[in-house]
Image 1 (cartoon, rainbow, N blue to C red):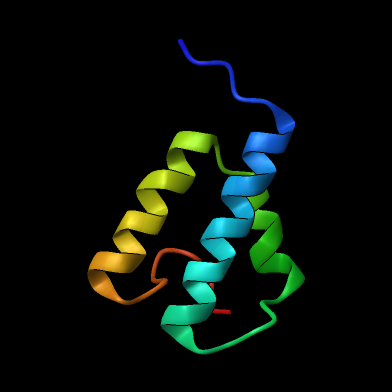
Image 2 (spheres, rainbow, N blue to C red; image 1 turned 120 degrees about the vertical axis):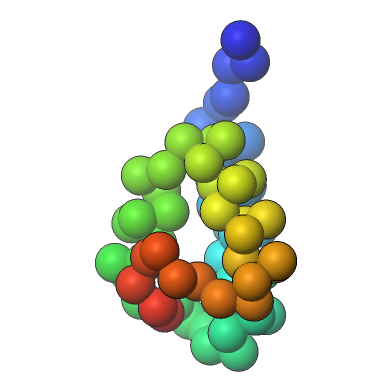
Length: 64
């Protein structure tokens, strides 16, 4: 099992935020949306961002 550091998790959250901003055209995102991302695991973030890219939507979490 892979051990993910706090810095790696932070970097993935920031990458997801960049993708979401690009897809939705909205920056900055609300703090509640960021909190939900920080509450996701490293792998969940990866699955989420792939879904955002495929669907061009952030459905499943509150829209930023």
